Image 1: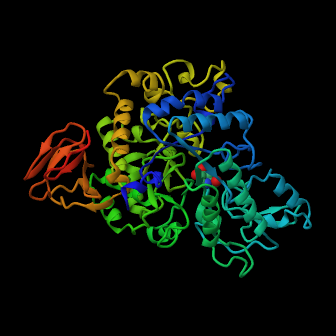
Image 2: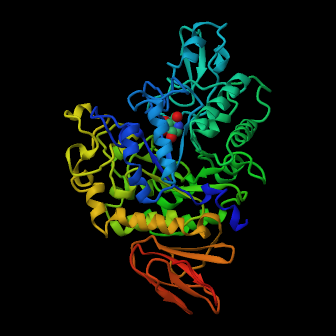
Image 3: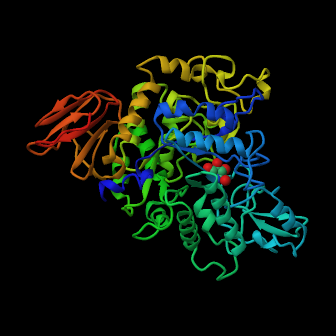
Amino acid sequence: MSRKTTSDLWWKNAVVYCLDVATFFDSDGDGCGDFVGLTERVDYLRGLGVNCLWLMPFYPSPNRDDGYDIVDFYGVDERLGTLGDLVELIRTARDRGIRVIADFVVNHTSDQHPWFRSACESRDSPYRDFYVWKDEKPDEQPGDVVFPDQEDSNWAWNEQAGQFYLHRFYSHQPDLNIANPEVRDEMAQIMGFWLNLGLSGFRVDAVPFLIEPIGLPEGAVVEPHELLRDLRAYLNRRNGEAILLGEVNLPPEEQRTFVGGEDGDELHMLFDFVGNQAMYLSLARGDATPLRETLRAAPALPHIASMARFVRNHDELTLDKLTDDERQEVFARFGADAGMQLYGRGLRRRLPPMLDGDEAAIRMTYSLAFALPGAAVLFYGEEIGMGENLAIDGRLAVRSPMQWSAERHGGFSLVEDPDDLVRPVTDGAFGPRHVNATALRRDPDSLLNWFERLIRRRRESPEIGFGTLTLLDVEAAPSVLAHRCDWRGSTIVAVHELGGNAVEVQLPVDDGEALVDVSTGEEHSLPATLALPRYGARWLRVRRAGQRLPP
Ligand code: NOJ
């Protein structure tokens, strides 16, 4: 790839920040965050250095799944402000060099959506065929249900309609019928609408569920991936820089098919669920092997596509791709208490409490995620080390309000009564008195200021975003993951200690080369022996004879 195309492929070196407008910053004192509040805080995000903002669903919704249950794809939830406020936010963010993308949730609608209401009313409704119906409940496989604590089937009976309808998630989220060309047209039109208002793409929700032809008549869908190819072609006809970042939690070979063929004509990016889970297993064991093996086995992607690396997201930390024994190891280390676990497959926790607040371990984990090729994705509050609030139900435990200061309600809202807050603020050791953006900004050694430096380094390291990954052999130190990223004659070597023990590693470096620590400038020449403290993390640039390195 030529140096000149890097800004065209901006997503490959992006640092993405995910937030829910409702829990970020409340400007008008009603207890709920809003677009105006977020716009006031865009400079905070600019200061942090992120260049893409991912907004969780902001559409009108009964909020039975925190906005992932939509009643109008063309509007905004009035608690958050107006469409005008959103456009101002997008414009302000763009002015600060931040592109905005948003959740695109079209596997299903809310059961309150006018399409579904009309569909239930009569078999002759023009919207009846927008959903998937059956007279008899089809057979199901164990494990097909996504939220087993709430649902026991993917088919629910609707009395008014007199039929069963398909719902892969909650029964209040009926699945759309992708075999219906009008539904597909509507999906494209929704994308077009938001692109015209200034969005730079979408985080596509539940992609495998979206394209699966479950419950459809034989032959109704020719090829499930065709829908993705069509949406992608439409998206990039409308806007050449717009991206699709997909939620595809599948085994690597299957996941790979979602970016399309050699020329990458489906999703631009895939969240790295499998690598994420392997990383937690490695951390639990203090042994880098599971992560190393997973990275080694990862299928190559077309040059236009990328992985999106993350440490935590807004859902439970799913461990569904580990074996039962491996999952138990991670549970034992990071959430032995049953109240921290969810659906038998995940943890409803944020990273810092899982690591008992061990700041060296926290920094090393993010440094590692940011050193792997692909975009880096942060969930709001990670940069200040927020913890979860287990008093909040289920997955929402990690979606408590952003902690801006030590003031009342963590400076999130001026509302009087805590019961009027959209969600309770976290308390205890990870609450705003101990963890807040204001205090951390003032301390040069804080996690927040460290994150700013990490993100700056990352954005200045095209080798990581665009380069090729090679795992380095440091088998004498099993707790260490060492890798290099090469891009156009430039190399970053990254070394991370995952076991919590100081170690020495011998790094393979060629004659005539030296390694220069990108943070400290310290030089290591041959033989490159590196002393790493417990949970040490180093990014080094290879200096070749006659080469001038970036500052
Ligand atoms: C995946 C989202 O991440 C999750 O939060 C949501 O509940 C489901 N999709 C259904 O939209």
